[in-house]
Each structure stands twice: as C-alpha cells, then as structure tokens.
Image 1 (cartoon, one colour):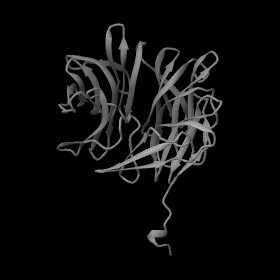
Image 2 (cartoon, helix red, strand yellow):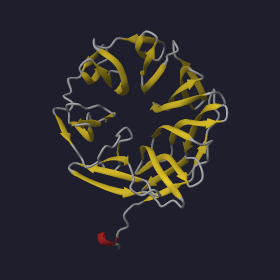
Image 3 (cartoon, rainbow, N blue to C red):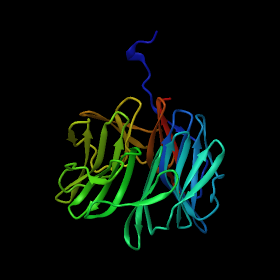
Length: 332
C-alpha cells in the first residue's frame, strides 16, 4: 500500500527524436490515443525548405518520408484526424493540397487554385476548410468530400487568421475586420459574426472546441502597449473572461489535458529546461521539463493529449549548434 503523501507525482520525461536538418520549424502536433501521434513542420535544407513529418507509435518517434512530395520543396501545416484517416495540409512547392493517410497508404487532394498565402486548415468528417489569400484578396475554400467551393464571409472581413471545426456544420474562425478582431461561426449554411464580446484592444491566438460544447478562446489584450494573456470560456450559455498569470504567452498550443485542466507551453526562465503552465479554473501552476545538458534554449511549440499522457514537441538549441527537434511526455 502507498499512502497519498508517498505517491509519485508524474513528471516530464524526454523522448528521443531523429534529427532533421537544422534549423527546423514545427507547425503542429496531434494525437489519437496513446499509440498514435503526428508532428509536422519543415526543415531548412541546403536548397530550401523541405516538409518534415514525424510519427509516434506509443513507444518511439520516427520520421515518415513516404508521403507524396516528401523530397520536394515545401512544408507541412496543421494535422487532423478525420474518421480513421490522418489529414495534413501540404504546401507542395507553392501549390496547396491535403494529404490523406488511410489503411491503404497516402493520397492527396489538390486545392482548386493556388493561393499567395495559406493561413490555416481545418478538417472534420464531411468537411474541410483552407483559408488564405490570392491576388483578389481573402479566400475561404470549402471541401465537402467530393469537390471544392468558395465561401463568403460577412462584410468588413479583411483576413481570416485561423479556423477550427467541431463538425461539418459547426466551424469557428477568427478574423481581422474593420471593427478589429472578430470571431466568426459557420452553421452549415453561412458564416456569421458569432457576437463574442472580446476584451477591448485584443486579438485571438486560438479557439479550442470540445465535444461537450465548451469553447475556450485564448489571446492577448493590449493596455498602453503592454500585452497580457486572456482566456474566454463558453459553457454553452455564457462567456467568462479570466486573466491567468501567464504574462504575454502565445496560447496557440493550448490543449485540454487528461486531467481536465488547460495546458500550454510558456517562456521558460531556465535556458536548459522547458516550462509549462496548467490552468485549472482560478488556479495556475507551472512545471518544468527535464534538464538538458548544454542547452541554451528549449522551446516546446505544440502539445497534444495522448490517452492519459501529454505529448510535447518543439525545438532545443544546444550550445554550438542550431535548434533541432525535441519531444517530452508527462505521465503515460
């Protein structure tokens, strides 16, 4: 028998990652249970940027180079689980496509047009969106499983910064408009202003949608030129705004952990260790990753819930070398 006082508190541990060509840039991390996770991004090879894809099988990270265009110029963006498949946005030498991995292997769905900027991507069963810009301005491209259409946004929307979806008829986006930052919502028929009263002089970094109907928005509010992080939570009826002690933390990597709290990486005050924040209601606590010998900068870039564990993926810069990949796990 072990008394509660003697129980071991779970701690972060380092997971080896095969090196890429540094410096590297991480785009996204997603997990489906403890035995499958994918991390995307790009490496800076001698002849330009190359897409970078890593897979976690529950035991180890390995690099995947079997997808179409793996050896060509380009980069990988957001990764999503759609039914039994993995969907990843791929900029393939300037042209956009969606990579799809099923039991039969990889395939690609090309976009109907090439955009100047590919800003974000979201996919759920029955629908996918790519937002960006071309020479005519804002583009919201929608895929229904068989073909593409271009969707309209409310008047005054200049730029869609990000998009996420819970179902084919429930998608959310945040956009720059003539009135400032605005949250938009797709109801299966039309995009509308979601009428979310964001804090004055603020922006949005991310919107976290959960199956329960809960919505969490993370962003920064500026007062006299100084930014502080805010969180807004919707319980299905009302919005609640809080200002946890996170300084000016970019909340894009925020996830709901297996313990029910919100987790996100924060700027570390220790050059040789990563740092994470846990926000549970009004209580915010912090934890550090494992110590890394000769590290001068450890930056977790993305988090994902993997069963009863949290996975982290990012970069570490060891003295005398360029930043390369690192991964850490809490629990599991």
